[in-house]
Length: 199
Length: 82
Image (cartoon, rainbow over all chains, first blue to last red; front, top):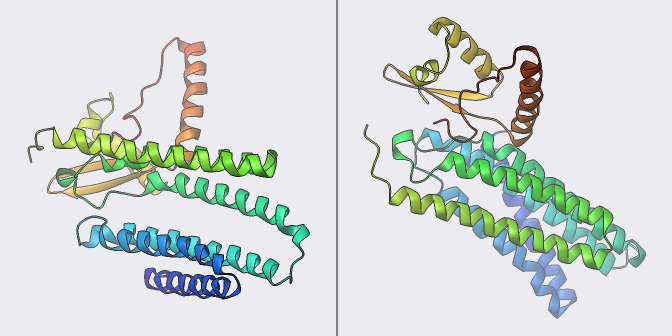
């Protein structure tokens, strides 16, 4: 699949998310919160498209990777909202809700693990002498962290009671995000205090 | 790391090193970038590949230690080759 096809697929999936979110809102005034993940994914994708390295040929694989990731997230989001809508419209029985919640929790963990596994394979879009921070080192660290967090979340959703699993999974995710951003900030701080590389 | 810096870590002829680099590139475990006469190599391993290498290295070290009483050498730590 070409990079352009991935972008089109991702945009179609996001549009579907938006339609489903608006449908929820029409059914229930509190349903507007379903639109929050759609907006967050859209903003993050736009950031990844326009703020990942210099505008040259080295940036292509990074943009292509983000298109794959965001198209996948948008598709999973659409699937999740579609299932919830089916429950809301009583097409699917309420008895299935715990199983479906558990299933989506495990799927989320597995996808985070797969994303983390591939992350260190991504090469920096900057030339070695132009690196704004230790790009490769940060991605390796975040990749390991995401893989372990994803596995942890999948195991938590498979083994713990649902209310406990939900809270634990959020705690793992928050810890992952804080450590990942912390690692990047440390790298940025140490890069700015280091003299520039001699070329 | 550049090809020269990597070669300094091993008692091997440069053509032998090049052959090893070619195998690693074919396996998509490293990336090579040519700039003038210098080739810079970067590690390109997934978490799973990295974990398997660490696992194999641990057992490899033990086997080698059992046979010859010495450790193996790794060209660069993950994330530091650039």
